[in-house]
Amino acid sequence: MEQLPKATVQQFIKTSTNGDMKCSNEFVTQVMSMAREYIQLVSDQANTICLEQGKKTISGEFFYKAISKLKLDSQIPHLKEIEEEIKEEVNVKNQNRARFQDEDHLKQLEEQQKQLYEKAKLENSKNMIDDEEQHGKSRKLNIQFEQEDEDEQ
Image (cartoon, rainbow, N blue to C red; front, side, top):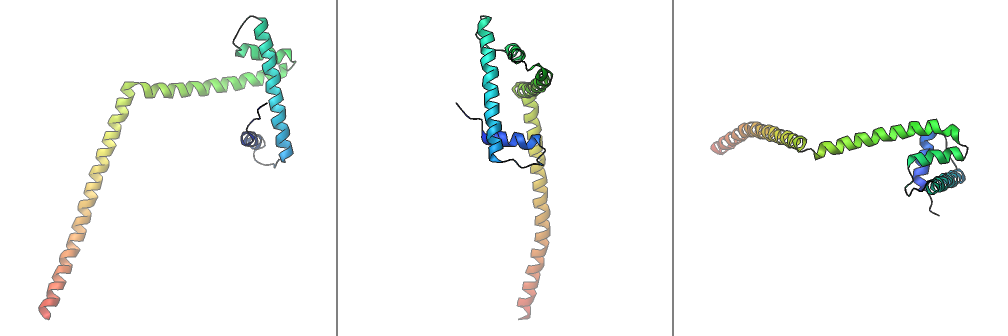
């Protein structure tokens, strides 16, 4: 059976303890083992319920029925909160993805990018002219000093 990614589990533990506690490798291994066992237990139960109802796809409905059948009903309110948070995140991602597929929005972004490019180009040209004016004066002064030195010799 596959293991859960150790780094992910360690990060989850660190987040859960606010980073205040150190955890032994043995503890991390136990958490990984228990999480894997929990996932397998709930998945097997959900699969059984799904097959009993003549379905071929395990949905969230079967997940909650499995949790109930395993007498873990006290977890359901917390799991539903997590489910809502995940749905919100997915909606935001889908909205952002849709925005970038919208041609009008893409044209707007392209126009903004062109304007920023032109503004930067203009500022760069202005800075180059200012630099030339400053350096040009000092060059003229240097040339004058060199000529005076040559005249004196």
